[in-house]
Amino acid sequence: MGIADFFSSFMPTVHADSEPIEPAKEESVEDTSAEGEEEEEPEDVHPAIREECKQSAKCRELTQHFEHCQERVESGGGFKGEDCVEELMMHCVDECAAPKLFSKLK
Image (cartoon, rainbow, N blue to C red; front, side, top):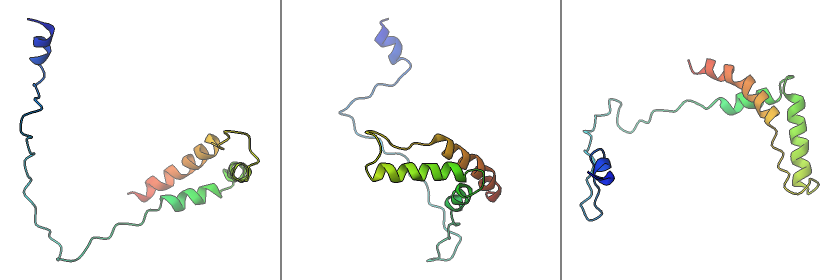
């Protein structure tokens, strides 16, 4: 028994010339809502919560530093390759937003 035989005993052989196997079609479940009505998706509160956290006293200074860096780089005043990735600002905003976001998901 060779190594190829050993592995082929665990894995099926696939041939490029064989007909593709189509997955089984699921039976459609009739929609219980009236026809033509679409279920409205709830509004995404994440962007609003993140903006609120950016303006909070805890993260405001880091956000202002990030925005100042962005303005400097976009105007051409930054050094070559500068991209203003501010992990501390993002961490602060995420830490502030997470509990508020999860409380809205209940």
